[in-house]
Image (cartoon, rainbow, N blue to C red; front, top):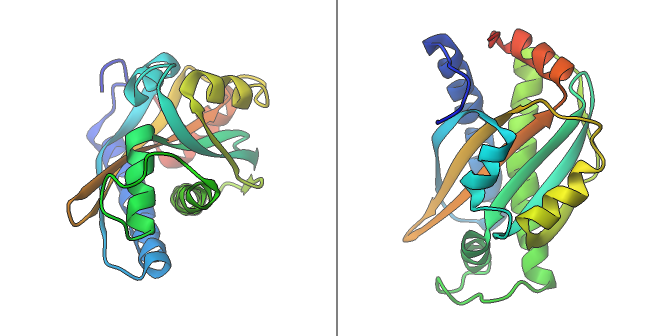
Length: 205
């Protein structure tokens, strides 16, 4: 990932382990939720400067759905799971058993479905990070937003005192028959909390 931390093989393996375990838990929960088999992959994971995560999603004007949770405890900060507009609509199609391309707007039912999936995915990764680090990580009630990325970030970052320039990123791809739904998990924390997290994961840089 351009601009990311120069990571060793051991560090990459650690992040891959977080991704794979979190994904395994998420797939199990989603299969129970939808009563159908599905696959998920992690095309990439790593750490990126904040400005690059904006580019990764599609820019400040990209319409996105976002499920966010504020983190408390040893790693205070914010986690977000973001889908762009097209992936959001495909996700609703999948969850409501409609043909791909049927959803063209997000109603209350669609919002509820996307929030449930985002909450499952975000919770899965946070639980794995907490268990691997033995750090105390508590989360608040999830918040859902469907708006331009710039507006979403502006409203969320007000609640965070400051964040490190490096953000943990886990890209996911949810596969169900002919549908491929891309999403991004982001963990934003302050420098001190990030150092604590890096040390606990063996990711000192």
